[in-house]
Image (cartoon, rainbow, N blue to C red; front, side):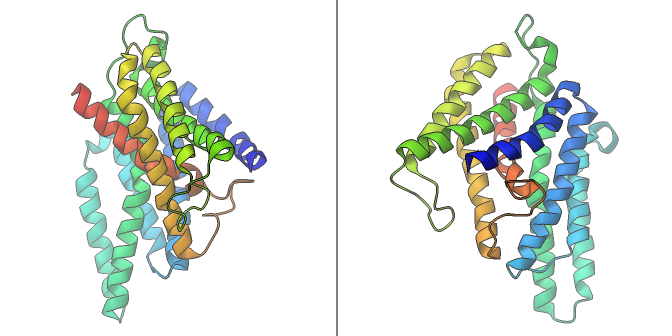
Length: 276
């Protein structure tokens, strides 16, 4: 298991780190590509679980919603309008299906799949909403966009790492075994502690009070765990172990971004509530 995680990281980390170093459009490009690949995997899972959909139309809708976050100056925050137009287009496509029940299933499945994967766009929205970095802070040169996105990435990775090692060492009592038999209460606590410690260090480096990590750490950690369990539900319904086989040792793209689908919106909401 650990070897698989290392192989997965070796594939994913270099392009992600490079994008975070370069910033701007490079981060947006990585998010858009991950959204497109994740959406294709998502619609395969839905189909395998007995939920038909328009995969290509749903993928296009997901990408369009993320582009709204990637190009705020061009689209000017028209995510709600894009979502409405997408919902209408999918409905029109469903009209051509002879069985109304099947048409409704396709309509619902397509819209759900697109909106679910498009949650990754909140990684970019977090960068837009992030407060300025305090002058003289260690990470001042990164700026708010890269600084807070790195905080999110490190917090999710810290949660996953802490939950894995603490759960393997001390985990006895399990929870939600019908979704993921490896999840333990000890792992949950270990992951939350690890996430909080990393968030505290990142906040200090951004010139913010580390005390806020007592709220942000558990929020991001619990959201990351919920995101992982949500994808587990999808895979269980589809009867598969992984969302795909693109990444050596750890399945598909959706298997790697699932935690961020829930963690990014939660952290963005916190930032908006605390700093706006």
